Structures are given as C-alpha cells and as structure tokens.
Length: 349
Image 1 (cartoon, rainbow, N blue to C red):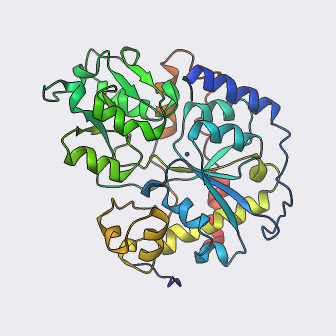
Image 2 (cartoon, rainbow, N blue to C red; image 1 turned 135 degrees about the horizontal axis):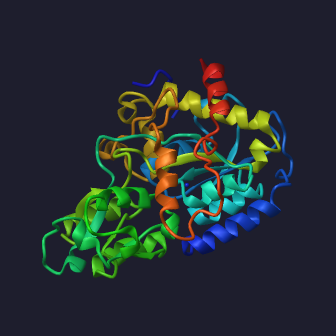
C-alpha cells in the first residue's frame, strides 16, 4: 500500500546509428530549452514516452502534473508520445529533457561518442512475462514448437537490429541452429504491429497496446511466445535524461530524479494499483478504475537497482551483429548514471 495519500523509451540499425552519431557530435554544445532554470520552476520539463502503456507508468504520472512527488518540488511537465528512434536525437540536442522507453544500440552509440545522455532509472519488473506474440496466420496451422521456426521469418522490432529485443532473441535462439542474422527485421509503425500479426505479414511482434494484445489472444490470431525481454521479467521502459539536464542543468536533473525516486519508493510499492493511486493510474492509462487491478503489475525497485550485468550482455549481443555498434571501447559502465541515482537515494532517504 502506498504511504502517500493523493487527491485524486526508424529505420535499420545502421541508419539509426549513423543518424544518432551525427546528431550526437553536432549536439555536444546542446542548448537548454527556453526559460531553463536550476530550480525547475520557470519552465516546463519536456517528457516523452514510447507507448501509452503500463511499462511507462512513472512518466505518464509525471506528465499528469498532479502527483505529489513532482508537484511538491515545483516541477511541471509537458508530455507527449515519442518513438524510441525519434527520442535519441531529441535527447541528444536538448529538445527533449526526459524519455521513458526501451534502450537501444543507438543509446550505447551516443554514449560511446561522448553525448550527454544516460539512463537514470530502471523500469519495473513483473512475474508476468512480457512475451512475443506469434502470429497463428504465419504458423499456417502448425503449433509453435521452438526456435527453429523463427528461421527466415519476419520479426518486428522498434529500431531494427539495434533494438533491445535482440537480447531476448539471442537467448531464445541460444542452443539452436538459428542465428540472429537468419531473421528478417521490420520496423513498421507500432500501431501496425497488431494488424500485421493478425494477417501473418510478420511472424512475431509485441503490440504496444494491452487491449490489442488481449484482442489477438482472445480471437486466436496470436499465441503467447517466449519472453520478449531479458532478463525475464524486466520492463522495457527505462528513464533517460538528455543533454539539456545532464549538461546544461544538473541541479534540475537531480531534482527531477529525486521526484522519481520518491514516486518509486513511496507510491509504487505493494498493492499500489488498488491504493490511492488507482484513479490516477486509470486516468493516465485510459482505463476504468475497476480495470486497473487487472493490468500487469510492475514492481518498481525502491533502491533503483538494475539487473546485474544487463548492460554488458546487451553490448555483447549488439557487438555480435554487423554495423550495429560504432564505437570501440566498452561503455557498459557508462550508460547508467549511477552517481545521479546514488545522490537521489540519499536526498529522498
């Protein structure tokens, strides 16, 4: 139960990599959005999320401008839906302050080329697996039997070979004769994933909408496949800060992260979906309040911890693919801003 009573992260990986690197280099002298202030009170903070789904709930709550950890610090947000490929150059050039969505090889490339960009908070974890949805039309009447059926198939990812789901695919294919390079990757619009699964034009994908997922399963148009994330249970949504905060306004960056830590520790623990936040969660996710308990519950780490070794694992998988990573030395220990996180934990107590 919450202890507070409220009133109530487009193209193939090579193209993306090139674009991010170009923007990163050009954007090292990023400009702070107009009206920036170290106290966070004189300008709106821009925040984006990759899908209006439960895995980005913290960002949606921040953008609603009614949740106490943010309002009591005088923070005001302007939120919008932003695709993961679009978020990278926006964060790198100071056009977007905060983003919650999937990590990608583009993030590692940007950090590897010196961009002020970092993950500052993990998403949640769930005992309910976030699975690939496999098209029954693509199976052509055959049951799903394992990784051998993925060979030569078209698979949706948000950012091509640089997508974080490649890490889950590497683990799905592990031990089989199928390699990541045997897959055909497509980067269609997220809204087109469910229809593509339905008509069999893609073998597997992850519809962004929970409603679309449920509809596909209920209609027998898809089956639940293997876990779409690794480590299993981890949320695909991380919180990122861009150059406008990390480079131009570190005090504001700290204040915002303090607020997220406060939210995680004091409002998103225990049975928060049936507690004081229930109505607000329903509002930001566009559900009826009584539907909120039926959603997949994300467990948010109060200590802001990440799965051990996940950055190195991700880097190793992407390094095994051609033309995905464009830097030489490892940045696995630089992608997450641990100093900012440690300070926020001390600030919130």
